Length: 303
Figure: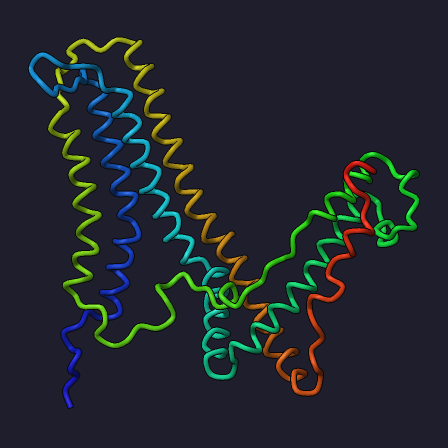
């Protein structure tokens, strides 16, 4: 039987396409750099009417800096998604989410999240107490508050005001992809085309405004002062491009990867420890003993 999908691109072709798309940010940044380089060797003005014109170098530089930042930010994020650590974290989290669809249920996961919230809140309270050199006894009415230092009294007030650590099922099942389920044929090519076209339309209108409004007069005799100004302006573009690349890369390789690891660790605890013990161990109320009574804490006036 012939392959009905024989006209689809091969794996090698798709890999080449992904490679080209992942470098579009660099291509866009290079063209932005070259275009602005040419503009800074010209006398740049903008004209809305024949009698109205003004210098636009600052706005051109600001606009180009944003283009450099966001272009290289997307490129940095795409490169980070190819790192081994992120791929392993994303795959591990994906396996646990799929396992929850088959073996888990929302009621038990909600109870698990309440227990984890209770446990982590107690851990956060103990960490805050140890930061100020305090113990649990300092939270009782019998604690000798007169012997506490001003910093320790402020610490008790912070403990009294601290909020509960919040863990929800949506945090454990969160994914960067769009939603967790999409019915077949629910996303038509025409609708997808419109969603991609509208942002492109607005971006094109904005860039076309600069392309049409900018008038350039070639500078025939450049001087050292002009060269110094050019180098300083190009440094601004390069700096913003590097910062954008680093921001996109770190957001995926560090922030997202760590989030996915923590998500997987909690889901693993849910399947390994919580579900097996759920039938034999009646859960206690997770809100009991979460915080000491407000009366046991010194008030702001007493502190």
